[in-house]
Each structure stands twice: as C-alpha cells, then as structure tokens.
Length: 397
Image (cartoon, rainbow, N blue to C red; front, side):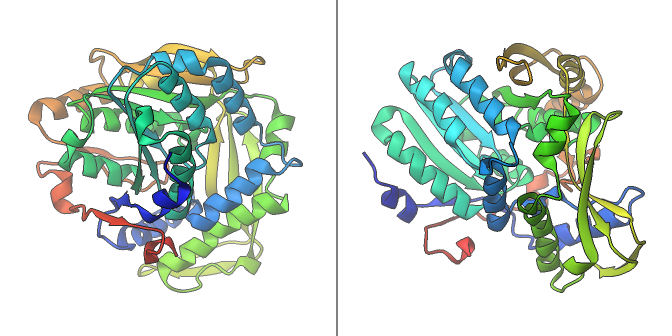
C-alpha cells in the first residue's frame, strides 16, 4: 500500500491558466458595478476558505445537514450509483474538497471490479494533497482505482481538456456533489451544464450531482446562519481574498457584517456582505460607492425540487435518468444523461460540435454566464502551462 507521504512528495497537475489575477480583478469590478452587487464565489475557496468550510461542516451547533444527508444517500445507494459508471471510465469530481463521501463511491466501484481513473478538481492545493493522500492510502494502484489531482477552476479544466482530451477515457462521469450546482440560479446552471457538454463533445458524458431539496426554513436558517462565528469567519475570508486579488485593503472588515435570508420565491438561501456605513471602493480603475446597509451577494444555495431539477437539466439537453434519496427525501443524488437536441442551450452546444469550435463562456463564477461562439479556440487565448508540484512547493503557501 502506498503511504500518505508518497502522495505528498509526488505531484498533482496545476492546470491553472497563466493569466494572473487580472480576470478576477475584472470580475470583482463587474460584480460590484452590476445592478445586483455580487462578489465572485471563487474567493471563498482558497486554502483558508476550505479549512473554514470544514469547520462549518463539522461544528455540531451549526448542524450542516447537506453534508450529513448526502453522506446518508451515498451510504444507502453507493452500489447502485457505482453501477452507472462503466468499466475503464474516467471519474472527475468538480470542486472535490473533502473526499470522504467520494471514497464510498470509489469503494463500491472497486467492489465491482472496475478499473477507474479518478481526477479530483479543486482550487486548494493543500486540500487536494490531503485528500489524495487519504484516497491513495485506501486505494493503492493495485486496487484498480487510480487517483489524480487537478489544481484549477471549471474553466481551467475545460481548457486543459480541449488540449489533452486523450488523457481521459471515452466515458466520462462528472461527479458534482455538495449541492454545488445550487450556487447558480436555474438559468446559469443550465448554461454551465451545456457548456461542459459542448466542450467535452468527444466523450460519452454523464453527470452525477447532489441536490438539496430541503424546504424547512428553520432547518435552513440554522444551517447557514451568518451570525454564527464559524460561518461568519468563512464568509469574511472572501473579503480577505478580494483584498489579495486587488493588491490593497479595499475591503475593511470592520466596515462589513454578514447577513442572510431564505428567499422563498427563488427557493435559495442567500448570504450577503452588508456595509455598516457608506463605503467607497477603489478597484480596477473604477470607484464604486456602496451605501450603508447595502448588500453584496457572497454565495447562494438553491433548494430545488425534482421538477425544478428536471427543468434545469432539460434546458441543457440532459435528462434525469436515476434518482437516489435519503430516508426523509430531503436530499437527492441524480444521474443526468444527454438527450437528443431539443433546442435552447443544446442547440448552441450542437452547433459548436458541428463547427468543431469550443463553446466559450466567460467564467466569472459570479452566477452569470454569457454564451457565445468564438472562431478561435479558447485555449489559444489562454494557453495552459501545465505544471506539477509537491508538498514543498510555494504554490501551497
């Protein structure tokens, strides 16, 4: 069996584009000058942010039910979920974070005698190395489960794939747990699903996604209460990261607090940064005025029913093939499969496939995606400089 140390001294693959933080600075400016002010949620998921989220997930007084319920679903149905993934497949986890739940699915795949290439995609190198160390201890190379790490965003992964599609098997399953799709509204979620489908057109693609369908407002409020110091620390780290991107202390934390509420019309919990006093923000060549009490969206978490998921999926050209639920039917894991072209986003995706061009969506990670066809492949605009690194790398700092 390989030791954790052997994983720590081996390499993951850094697929981040060599474009510095200029795009993110533009995203900050665009989000703060939009009608509904918003910060890129990607700011929350650095090394520190991932550690603070783990504190949320494991603090009893918060009762972070989505993680508990998703674990329950996987424990109940891991074997059936694994049956949807064929032999010699590639399993890619989007925003892998803590991979304890993933290990349950990999164990079921191993029990079915399947050879699987697993890739964990995440923004935190420290988190990736830690997760891969644990997985490699459980699944040595002789087990048939090969574990890899990809450091980057969704965009980075798609651009990397467009350059190196042969590194993946013909069948690809995208594992998207944690109700991460709920960080987008329904229109944007459909666009993102279609975008993956278009860029990975040469593969037999399916999604396995986690969906939080809780509508108990008191349970939701307890879970996401931004007044709780652990949750507040997680959210405030986003302001620290914004300052790092901007290279100066634009956001003074003493001028901001965190609030949130359940939007029963949109069926989503929304967490906000709220100014304690009038603020003037100088960023990326723009001056942004934020009035006292004005809200800036930090992150959202949608709570969708089966019907709403069907709508989101069909708009992207997917259909729900299988559904697995917890005993209380609060949380579900769904298998999404491609359907024939039915219009909307799928028409754009198929047009892209026929033309041989990638579907380019500027990835603000703001919950807004603009669909366009670009006659020049996206990876020529931002070539990926693939790097590898070990535990002593400065990238981990």
